[in-house]
Image (cartoon, rainbow, N blue to C red):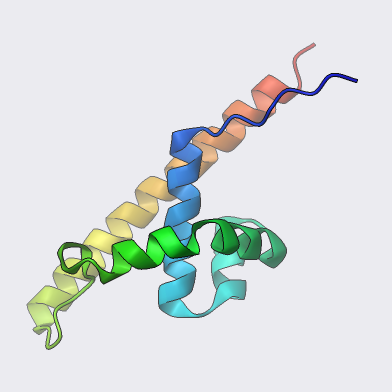
Length: 107
């Protein structure tokens, strides 16, 4: 049986990296996996694949979540930014799942 090589779709890879970052930052893999709608085993595989790259991004001061002594306003702005990004990612995941369903079940 002929099998196609797995082609990575960059949008999906970015979603995976974002969930890996959330898991690494929170330390709560089970909660992040549930939120992503995947098994903890799948999240662990993603972490193995992307951890080095994600940790490198996390160490970059320009991508820091908050300053060392954030003000209430900074925390609120970061929270609002994070919620906006999370909403966008959830929408992206939903759209990709719908697309995947449509391509898998063609008559």
